[in-house]
Length: 350
Image 1 (cartoon, rainbow, N blue to C red):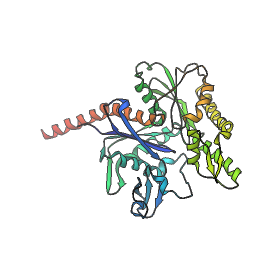
Image 2 (image 1 turned 180 degrees about the horizontal axis):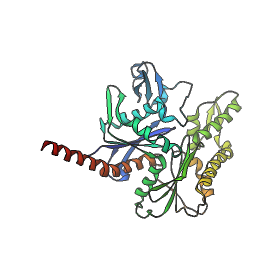
Image 3 (image 1 turned 180 degrees about the vertical axis):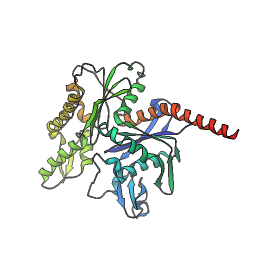
Image 4 (image 1 turned 45 degrees about the vertical axis):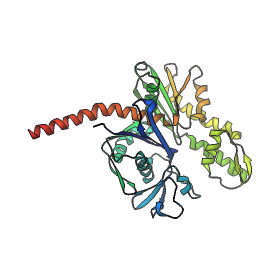
C-alpha cells in the first residue's frame, strides 16, 4: 500500500501545505495556502449567523474554537493580534493553523508529515514540534486526522531541495556550496550547505522580516493621519503590487518609504554576511520566500558578482522541498521499518 506523505509550513504570514501529488515529479506537487490567522471563540463560529459560505474551519483546542482558513479575514475584528515570537509553535494558534492545513488536505491518515522551523530555533524546537504533530488531531466538524510520524526540517533546507530537484542538479551540486536566503514574515533565514548537507554554524536567522517593513510603513501612515493605522495586510498588498493605499479617502504611496525599507533589508543581509564569512566559496545563491521581492535589491548588492537564482512560486519552495525530502525518507526508513514489522509478525505466526 502506498504511503501517504504530506508537508505543511506554518509561517508567521501564511500557512502553506501540500494537497496532493500528480505524476510524482516536483513540478506535480500541488500546494495551497491561507493566512496565518487564528481567531478564538468560546462557541463554534461555523454555526454563527453570517458565517455561512465562508471558507473557514473551527478547530477545537483547549475549550475554545479557533477559526482558520482562506476566508479567515472575514472573521477578523479590528484588533489584529498575531503570535510573532520564538515560542510560536507552543501556542494554540500554531496548532490550530497546522490542524486547519490537515483538514484541507482531505485525508484521514498521514504516514509521514514533514514540517518546518526557522533556522535559529531548529535544534531547540525540532523534537518538540515532531511530538506535537504526531498522533490524533481533532480538525473540527467531527473529523480527525492521524499522523503516524512527523519529521521537522530547517525551513530553507526545503527550498534548497526544491531548487536542486526542479533544475535536476542534485548530483551536480553534491560538492558545491549553496546559500539559500528565505525572507519570511518574522524572520530573515539563511542556510549554507554543501550539496544537500547543512552547515549549521553558518546558517541562522534574524528578526528582520516582512512584518518589520509593514510596521514601519504603518507607523508612517499613523503619523500622517494622526491615529494608529493597523491594516498591515493592505500595506503588504500595496507593496507587492506597486499600488497606492486609500486611507480616509486619500492616497498614500508606500513607495515613499522605500529608502527605509532598504535599510531594514540591508541590516538583515549584513547580519547574514557576518555569519557566513566570504562569499567567494558560494556557487549558488538561491532567493526564495514570500518576502523575496523586498530583499532582492539588498541581496544583489551583497552578491554583485553572483547570479541570484530563483524558483517558480517561491512562497511554496520550502513546502515542496519538504514533500520531496519526505518521499525520499519514507521510501527508505519507513518502508524498511514496515518490512521489519511484517517479518516479525510472520515469525510470531509461525
